[in-house]
Image 1 (cartoon, rainbow, N blue to C red):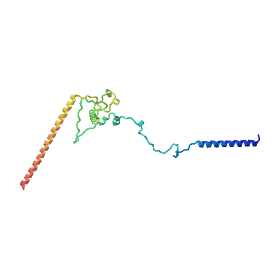
Image 2 (cartoon, rainbow, N blue to C red; image 1 turned 180 degrees about the vertical axis):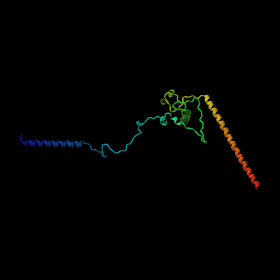
Image 3 (cartoon, rainbow, N blue to C red; image 1 turned 90 degrees about the vertical axis):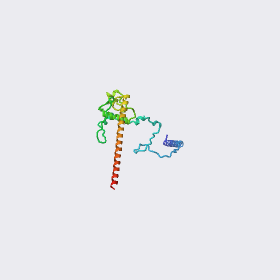
Image 4 (cartoon, rainbow, N blue to C red; image 1 turned 135 degrees about the vertical axis):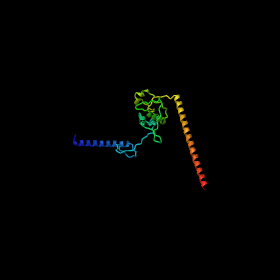
Amino acid sequence: MDLFTFWLFLKVSLKKICSYSRKLTYGSLLKAKPDLNTTLPVRQTASIFKQPVTKVTNHPNNKVKTDPQKAVEQPKQLFWERKLSGLNAFDIAEELVKTMDLPKGLQGVGPACSDKTLLSAIASALHTSPAPITGQLTAAVEKNPGVWLNTAQPLCKAFVVTDDDIRKQEDLVQNVRRRLEEALMADMLAHIKDTAADVEAEVKGEQVEKEEL
């Protein structure tokens, strides 16, 4: 085989290869679908700048069940009643008001719980909580009050109010009301007496002026 024949063979082979590649390229262009998307291309790399994000919270799966009672109640510190110790009440004359004596059935529980602190704690519970005051119902609170303490109740042992206690309290209220009524009546009579004395003094003064004229 001479060189001329070999050159012709290579030339024909290259033409066939080029024509075949052109057919493949043209066929791929015909089969390709046109891209009708007119949006600008966006880089897929991570951005270092802050971008706004919309948070969807009204999805049904995002609803969280909450207890409304726990949401209303505020957490309480253990033995917060000890902060009330050392507080005293004074009247308008800046004299110390004598505190009332607690019944024998009310006994304090917990560390450093005095009668004054217990009285302040019970008064606070009556004014701030609509629940009944029963005291610490668990007997284990005396052994370990830091674990078994019920913060919704004052630092006192469980007690029961009997009918006799209610009658004694009613009698006490009636006595206080009667004393208050007597004091108001005496004050009113004294005011009427002073007013009558002032009127009588004015009348006498007018009579003296008329006699002098």
